[in-house]
Image (cartoon, rainbow, N blue to C red; front, side):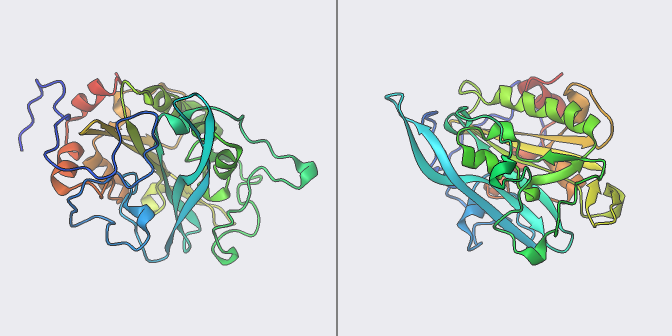
Length: 314
């Protein structure tokens, strides 16, 4: 379908579909699948793990990959400004047991789960805590016997950021699991990657979104997209990516971001932008597959300049 670049909000379009379990109320967490009622041929909706039906999930690879769904106590402020708690999905990770690497982590951002009640986790070694715990959801045969990042020269690069999960201590600690880490050069992790995360938090406001659905990770599936594999087996990706879907009312828009893994302290700018279709070709991952095909096709093929304008990136 041809694109009319003169329409500033081309990617916004009203859905003539019934939405199931979607809320536009910023006080209510969007912890359901939030998937439009009409399915599509490439979705996860037939997967017996119903968590994979949520909109943040890419198409699950299967085979040697496991889906790790992290549930935690989440703080929910109510209309009387008191805080209650409920148990819900914090974030999810696809872990490849053959490659011993995570492929992506995905999560939601909305009003309630973005409220800061706790500080960043710092392990209390006197109580036997460790800064980067092994994931209790992962069997010992599928991970590493010790921290593979230790003395590797690479940072523990959070994929689901600690700062995006500060509503409860439990939800924050889970972001420090080794399965949520990818090796990153410090000058990348503390540079453009951190600036991207800060920018995304700036977009996490009620005037812009009801819910943001986020998928992030590093490239691990082909030799031309990895820098090296360390002696302990840890894969160092050559590229990192983020795919972000925004729901506002009954409309959707999406942006893809693609970063070469190198020393980079640049601000987030338009050269990093890809549309979702381009990002899928680069990564081999089918993002936002639980959207109906017509919506998915529309949001994934928009021109980069349209995407940059609406997401406020120059």
